[in-house]
Length: 288
Length: 323
Image (cartoon, rainbow over all chains, first blue to last red; front, side):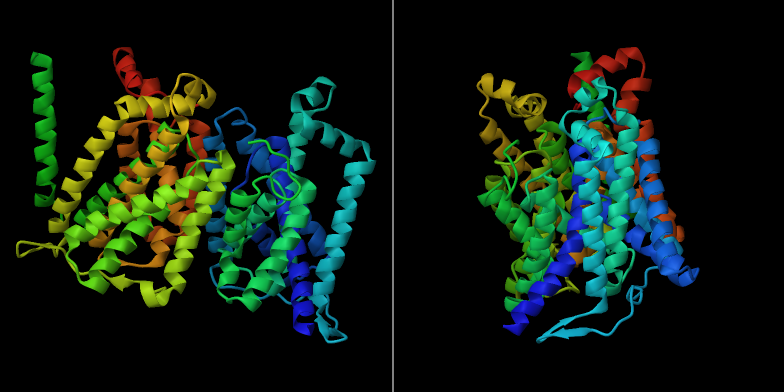
């Protein structure tokens, strides 16, 4: 019983990071209709930039976090301005290929700068693991839960209670309509790209101490985010968040109770299973 | 009459040229040429399903893997000779492709893309972890093919197997694409509802596209075993999916000739920049992004843009651009 509870908590913690990745992908997909196949690599780049600031340049934790967020938002905005703005009316295939191009580009860049060997950054905060009646919660678990909670509250506040959020919702519903009532959709796209890559970076440095960081780590995040998006109904932000958490729990349960290597393909099986039996996902509406 | 005769002469000359290639190459160059031919066959499958019938099915690397493992395992485990194994690899992949299509037919665009990518990675997982059957993550060596005592044990000899099989299947696909089936594919690609309204059985033709992609991928997989001599699960993971995708889009979707050029370029580039192995992925990514920005129509689009006007109609008449 303790074992099950432990797995549920670990799954929830890791899953909440998957949610951050998949929500980042979903808001991008919702507004710009770009499905970013290079998003896993954005997670990887975020993790490495944070590692560089904190452990190679020796910045303190808050400074490192702020600098990482800042640079990743800039990276996202630049991606939009330089590449995705000019091809906004191109066929879907071309846009998908451009995101694949970034996948290679970032992987190559990371291999060049930080080399291939995996690195194990220390945890964000340093306190003793706590024993809550047989269930052990580590310091990184707490750091992740607190950060994701803060991030989620921040997003919900922006999204539901500010004017920016109102504009965002308007643009997500109908881009043309939003442009007609005077919302600057071009800047808006750039902003969304920044936020999306920034969210990926957060997940990257939160999960870094648990999974280790290396240039090939992006692929698994990408597939998990896809699974979470599919599970929650494609293009549904709340669904993506819940889907991420479910993915985290499911893959840990599968790893423990069925077969450890199966953990790696749990996400693919979830994708295929959902698409065969309930293609709309748990919160989605049918639109394909 | 005279025109068609000179056309046959050119074709025959080209064929003879192809058969003479091994006379002037060394082993390494021959290996690269073999690789180009096999890649062309796989990408042809992907081009048919993606460029001609407009389905986002990135399963070509998966089919390649199924074909290679079928041929390899039949030869190693059961000790049957290469030729029936090659046929079996085409057949098994056909069955798998049809099974995948039963799911795939219900999905569109990104859903289909994600499902087919998942399929490919699941197969890779299977090769790695079902070690009792597939000999595990380090792969296995493949015995050479023999025909009436003649052993195909060098790259130059393997080339003739590859050449004959690839030519056969390319001509077959070319003819299929120019027939009623090919036109139905393009109609479905351009507008599915309109195609259905024109009494084209959309489901049937989509299934057919999957089947053709499967057979081409499977046969290419069978050839792959002889070209490489050894197969490992990593040959069929995420990177090959992207590689095939890059080739098809670089060639220009729905263009046969562009596909050939793109296959040659993309297969040779990694070999040329082998000295700068650290920069390989970086360069690759930069090239992809640049192509999308500068020449979104791929090589075919460039040909249309810069060729003399009297050729343009001919080029355009063969296949239309995907939009």
